[in-house]
Length: 468
Ligand SMILES: [Fe+2]
Ligand SMILES: [Fe+2]
Image (cartoon, rainbow, N blue to C red):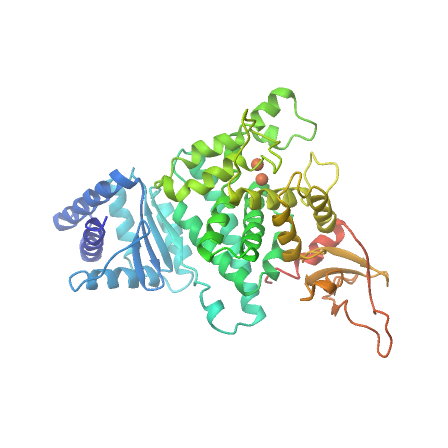
């Protein structure tokens, strides 16, 4: 890799330059293309796919930074610049790519970028031209600045929305890759997890709110993303290092990939499953392991393998897959299991008789602490998301309905979060701190009576967290 990285950049650079000047059937172009393809194949031999990525101002190939010396400086900077101009963060070459396809790709990629929606335009052109073995990923500004500078709420809201929808889209790609027996894109998963981890360290409120919106079409995609967000929140609050927190997030994103091989009719069956169907369902952890082990680096995917295998094994060793000797549970698994159960219980599904409100799901998890769930993780989880998590719809003693928008810092005020009213006419309701007392009095102005699960409020609450 150390040797091939700069060579690949060099060939990409010269092929890019020549296709800009000549036709595809020109000799110089053909020579440049064959050299490039040869290097791609050589890299692909050891690593499968080849991903060229720009992060900040660094160029990486399969997540290894290309070291810049005086010779490679020009080509590296050129490539970074051309990718940024087209808002491309990553170019991913599949092993199947052939000379002709490579030519069409380079011709389109290095043509003059369009003025508007530069990435979308390029992506469309590539798919029109039938380029399927080279994929591009859109560049999204890194959230690193969130930690460094004071950022306003609107920026965090926008960033949270972007990362969430990016993650949901990514899960779609993962499922597609698995259906086609291709390895999962681990580097991209970890970049997404790192972005989520960055936001969590700044202000996770909007992310938790978004995770509470359950009306996405694609359940498995958004479920995996929600579990990832909640798992990372727990990991962060347990004091894990940022890179470990992101690893937890990656494992959570992948925990249910084995479900790709379970028929939809079984996954979405409204009635209870037959014994045969259960047997099939219970295979999804192991099927996930098989799929994940196609990854380029087994070392990098190791935590995810354990979590996929064990996420239905509980603290007391019950659950599935069954094992004759006691399970030794991976520490990340203790986190992901709780986030998984919580998201599942609070999401309406055809086969589930009752969808729990967030606070009742938490109470249930609390009751099973020490038995089904690791007590320390349960405690951390409740402390992190509060008694009434952000996104919970509640009825107040005034008869009004409201949605929880923020926790109060103090533990003693766990029952009194900040809420936004949800007026009947759908107008944006006023924010209200439930810790507030009436002027001169000791009584609180408003108090939560109960949480409610009512579809009418779901859409209205969603507007609180989504970017319009
Ligand atoms: Fe599962
Ligand atoms: Fe799950």
